[in-house]
Length: 247
Ligand code: NDP
Image (tube, rainbow, N blue to C red):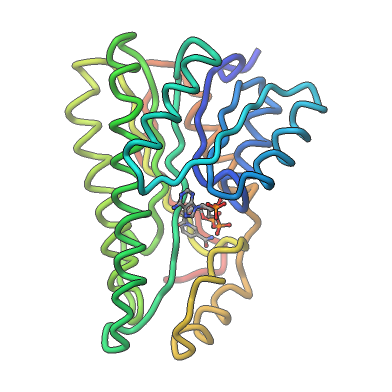
């Protein structure tokens, strides 16, 4: 039997791409899922499909930029299933642009979703996990959280921050409460992510790179691997690129 059987896992950004595929992968291993994102109809459709295939999934429309909504999400998961074993803080945006384009609203959104959303997710589940002295927090960074390129200054800033926050979390909680922390950094993956790019000067280069993009189920399998390891094994960080991606 998989270690994932009956684990209660919250997934943010579960309405598309990597989050949706992660939901399918973990459901196939017997996880009890709490799916979150803003597009409720997409969540309902995904949850219905999982439940019709012997899965167990509930959903809640949630904006990760609201600490209150994230707290309500954790409470909902706890009320539904009696415990929270893991959260995958996956919701994210990538409106890449050159700094001189002054796309300040897009910078604010990225900081709110990619950094604050992850922090609010951590804050929402920590009390439940600390009480049981067990839990697993998996945060999605990016190859852009390891290297910067022209156009990625702010996005990279948010993804470097995710790595810093996750490593700090690991140090604070690993001995104190046995909580595992995992950073997953994908390269180019074909999802809806690039649709948020409004800077045409960046878009063409990104479109070229994404010719080689791999499918999101590859990242879902990585999440599954980290979760499936026994409690005393913490998979702290993984980078997964398309084989042909050099950067
Ligand atoms: P998608 O655009 O397909 O998915 C993004 C998800 O985030 C959607 O489910 C969206 O749902 C959700 N989301 C966005 N804003 C919010 C919000 N305010 N509140 C709640 N949910 C929100 O992209 P991916 O699947 O590719 O992205 C998943 C993660 O992987 C991101 O963190 C991304 O940075 C990271 N990543 C992706 C790479 C790629 O090449 N695809 C590469 C490296 C990292 P909704 O709109 O319904 O709210």
